[in-house]
Length: 199
Picture 1 (cartoon, rainbow, N blue to C red):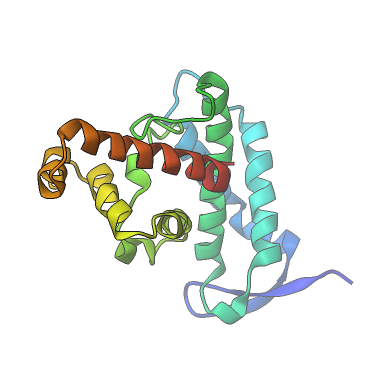
Picture 2 (picture 1 turned 90 degrees about the vertical axis):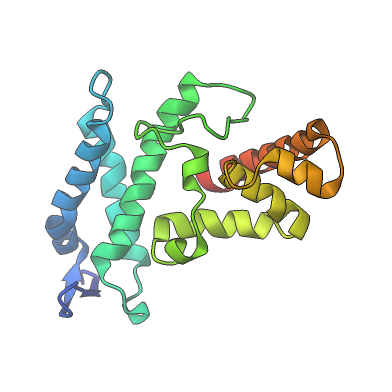
């Protein structure tokens, strides 16, 4: 017997569907995300067939892992999965081009959308409404437990309002010493993000 799952729709309706039915309904959504990502790389787009293999896999994962009891529509959950699929495809390309002993610049682009690690840091309020960023935010929050590191994180997030010099003055240390602390936290987060988020 073919497995079915209760799928919730954005209009408030729901229906028991097989994977093939879900795939047929939502494949255009996957194609749209793939083409949007590829449009950012006009001179070297990823082969659509290869790209869609990853996107099809994400549709399957979404179907398998979707829980209607959580009361969010399937397309919202699938969007999160498709963004991860885009990230996986585009990041693998970036990783091949840029080998730096597993370390990344905080402002180096991480995929064809010119997304910087700095751009991934978002407020808790906005993160709570976005599956894609919530995962990253939780990883960072878990690994920046102390108030002292949180203070340094603010510098990484917004140097205009939280400058290294202000931090140095507040803690009565040299600007160089303050900058070393910022660099240390940046490297720590780079490794964590690579290991827990990008791979």
